[in-house]
Length: 534
Image 1 (cartoon, rainbow, N blue to C red):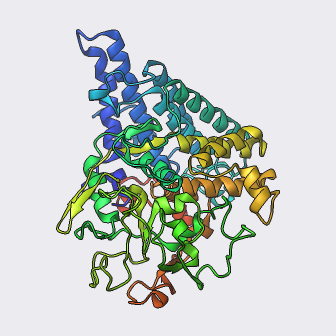
Image 2: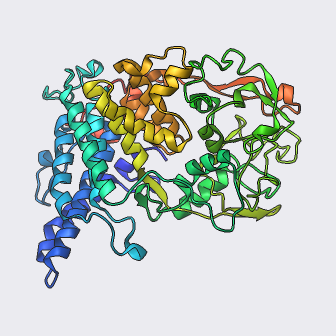
Image 3: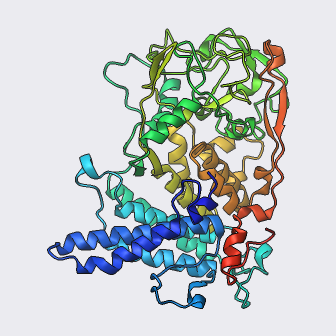
């Protein structure tokens, strides 16, 4: 479903503007409700103010400058009053932040009735959205974007300030730290996998991989700041489409593919990018084949052949991706002497042999699959989970980014990115680059550390929906326009399977950083202006 549908409420989506009007109706009338405790009324008001801010923030991400609906117009409003204008980005940001600031004092630090109310808004959630809003406002898309210098309302009002304001990054860093402090006070922490008592010994490699997978699939773990409590049906369907067919079950949808572009993003085992590691064969990554050694049995099927590209990568690569000869920990197979491996080259036991229900690239998003799932050849039993909409690691990375942009690299910025890396079994940024990178001093410069934080963010949040927005706020057309690549998945031999193919070549331009407004809306309200280049 495209995002503009949430503006207009089409194709089954619910319009954010209708939701905002409902919030206004509530706020106008809650004071009239008799026999309600003041504390409860204040909490409800705070929750609804949060929702108003959140809906405006979501529209800001999609469209940039938007009309702000502070109060509902009366039925008697004139035609001209109804024809609202877009407000400058800074005005929208100020409104979102102000509304959140009004809500935060009356929100609880934690949910006390967790059996019934998990998912309701708390102080850490509101502070996290405030941090995200201010980071977006400070980012290149909206902070001094000269591409939008002529983006104005019809009366000449500029909708974006073309001058860079570095103070915005300082405000964003302060907001991130305030959100992190509140999360820590509420006992949020980086999540680590806790092995069930009835599970046998597992290797360090499997433990690190499960640290990553269970962060998503272990619902309400201590890293989750905000979970979408009504999302279980969606995560069940999502898992079905992410799961490759395997020797335990042969009925999954198996259609969601991860591109080689995504796979390239992950580091080498040494914790640096594959094109920067002086000990990793970057030139031969797609052309050389290797036999998997027994020492890699926790991750890959020993004695079989795979691409050099799949070897000697960081644990998040193996946690996030399923592919031919990779392990699929779970499905009742948690004994490392009897692991489940995928074999998907055309004609093998896990491929359908037909042009349906396969990955068009040769990779699946394993990170989103619950290891507790089970099945048989004709049945797939999925254990759904609540989607973690905001988690602590993303706040840590936002904070490191904002600190670097405001002040340059610092001990504090290194600390928070290294906490995320530690969970994945990696050394700190300074140590990893000094030991393994071709440019060991890269983390010491603002531009170099920016590149590191961006890549770390894309790796850590892979398949969670955040990178879609991040590359846009960074104005990173290079990533958006990289040709989508995969293996030659219809081939029946290993040698032919591992041939690189271009599946699709995008052609994005800077107009695609923002969504268009429908022509119908522009005709109904002539005071609206279209986004640039649409």
